[in-house]
Amino acid sequence: MTNSFVFPCLLLLLLPLVAAQLRVGFYNSTCPRAELIVRKVVQERFRKNRTITAALLRMHFHDCFVRGCDASVLIDSTKTTPSEKNAVPNQTVREFNLIDKAKKKLEAACPGVVSCADIITLATRDSVALAGGPNYSVPTGRRDGLISDPNLVNVPGPTFSVSQALQSFTAVGLTLFDMVTLLGAHTVGVTHCDFFRNRLSNFEGTGKPDPTMDPALVSKLFSLCGTQSRPLKHDPTTFLDRTTPFIVDNQYYNDILAGRGIMQIDQELALDASTASFVSGFANDSLGFQLSFANALVKMGSIEVLVGKAGEIRKNCRVFNSKRKM
Image (cartoon, rainbow, N blue to C red; front, side, top):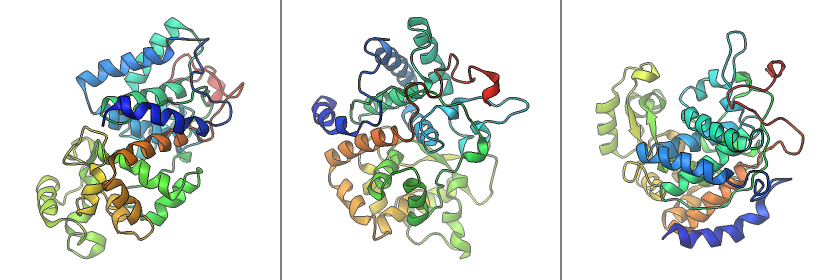
C-alpha cells in the first residue's frame, strides 16, 4: 500500500469531520507556504532521526488531552510559575526544538499568522506520512491557549485498565474505538523500563511475571531492566513495537495478540472483551488501520480547539505573548 493510494480515500473520508471553524487549507490566502514550510522542517529532522514520529504523536496527544489542542504543552516554566512541562507525564515529551524551528521560519514568512497549535498538528501529520503511515489532510485554524497549568495534566497511564483509560478518552469526546485506534501510535517509539518493570517479576504483588506476557519477551526485558527502579534519564528503554519500530503500521496489534505488548494497557486491549474484536480487526486489516488512524488523529486534533478571536497566535511557542497569561 502506498501513501498516494491512501490520500484520495482519506480526503473524502476526513472532510466531514472538521470541527467548528477549522478547515483544510485555512492558511491558503494568509500564508500559502505554511504547510510546506512545516513539512520541510519535519523532513529535514526525520532524515536525521526517525524517532520524531513517536515524539510528535506523543506531544500532540499530551497537548490535546489537556484543555484541548492549544499548544499549552509547549510553554516553558518560569522561576515563579510552573507549566505543563513540569507535570510528570510530560517530562519525557520532546522535539520542542523542531516546533521552534518551524515557528521561526513561519514568522519570517508571515508574522503572527500560523499558530503553534497548528504547527504541532501539521508536524505530526507529516511525520506519520514519512514513517509509512497515511498521508492525510488536516483542518487548520487553531489558536494558541492562554493557560498552561501542570495541575491540569491528567492523561491515561501505562498501567491503566481498559475501563480506566476509556474514562480519560470519553472525557474529551473520544470513543472506545478511537482509543483502540490511537493507542496504535505505539507502533512506533520506545518506553522506559519503569513503565512496565512491574510486569516482569512482581506483577500485582504476586512475585511472578504477568502471565499474559510472552515468557521469551519477559526474559529479554528482565535482562534489560532488572528489578531496580532508576531515574528516567538512566532508565533503559525498549521499542514498543519490536518488529517494525520506525514504521506506522498495524504490527502493534499483531504483537499484542501474541502476548508481546510491552505496557499493561497495550496487552489489556487484546484481552478485554470490549476491545478484543477491534484489535483482531486491525491486526488483519492494514488499510483499515491506516484509514482509522488518520480519522482518529483528525478527531483528536479537533478537541476543544480555540478559533476566531479566542486565544492568541504566539510569536514564540514557548512563551505567552503577554506575561499576565500564566
